[in-house]
Every structure is written in C-alpha cells, then in structure tokens.
Amino acid sequence: MNTIKKTLYIVRHGQTELNKLGIVQGRGMNTDLNDEGRKQAAQFFDSYKDVAFDKIYISELKRTQQSIQKFIDLGIPYEKLEGLDEMAWGVLEGTESTPENRASFLQVIREWVAGNLDVSLDGGESPNQVKARQEKAIATILSHPEEETVLICMHGRAMRLLLCWITGQPLTEMETFPHQNLILYKLTYDGDKFEIIDFNNAEHLK
Image (cartoon, rainbow, N blue to C red):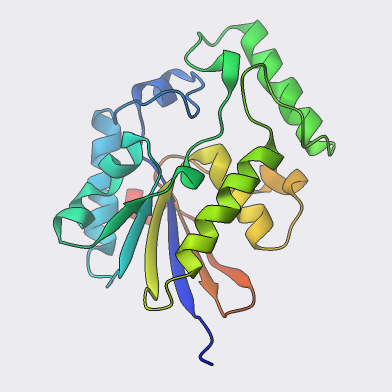
C-alpha cells in the first residue's frame, strides 16, 4: 500500500478591520478583508501562484476565501470545512477592546496554557472542542491521497491549536506559534507524522 504523502501550505487569512482595531472576531463574526488584507492576499498570490496546488481547503468564513480567491480563480478546486473555522470566543466576539475585555481574554488564555483545556468563555468554545472539529477536517484532507500539495486558509487561534496537535505537541503550547495576518506555515506529512518545514514565513509580505 502506498504511503500518503502530502505537503500542506497553511496560511492565516488577511487583515480585516477588526484585526486592525484589536477586536476579537471568532467564529461568529463573518467579516471581510480590508484594503491591507486584500494587499496581503495579492502579495501571497504573487509569491506562490506557481505552486501546483491540487486542492484548497478553507473555513466557512468568507475572510478565508477572500484571502486565496486568486488561486480559486486559476481553477484549483476548493472545499469549505467547518473544522477550519476560527474558535468561537462567545461573549467577547465583536466587542470593543476595553481593559475588562482584554483581561477576560488574557485570563482564559492563562487557563488554557495552565492545562485547563475544557474552559471556554461564555458562549464560546474550548480548545478541546476546537480540536475535535479540526480532527474531522484533517481526516477529510488526509482521505484524499491524490491531493499531494494542499493550500489551507484558516484563522489565528485555530491555526495555533492545529499546529500543536498535528505535530504531537500538547495544546498548552499554543502560544509558541506566532501568527500575524497571511503568514505561512508549511508542513510535510509522510503518512505517519507532520513536520513543520517553514515556520511563520512572512517573506512574501515584504
């Protein structure tokens, strides 16, 4: 039996106005890219348009599709997976960035890093709930051995969690993966394990 081998290019979506303002978006906020985000999308496309992607996977939120639309326009097939959606931040989504809200945000992240991975904000998701969604998405992606080179566009916090568990690290290590808008993590999969071969690459944005 042939071993499944894949190369995954995983990018975070481009900037939205809420990103710029420091407002938490989350799964419940279906925002558009702003001018800077569209510029980032164009820069990424210009740098990677010659990669022969077999398939594109995006979340169900439009900011991911807008970020890689130029690749879709080349005729590359794409699929939306809810498992790639951003974490739901519940009561914090879309609220002004006040000292109280920032404190709530930092407190829940401290809980997670301390190992309390079932904790969530009111109305939001825990890291373990996000991981459960992501496991289904990755199973879908791995179920297509013919798709050897894959582009995935997703979201900041969700990407951090994904990078932890697919590389065999505990979710408590999520803060070790930086993720500004439209940066790239490139991974290989040898049929057994994932390995990061390009970490937080922002060369295309310069």
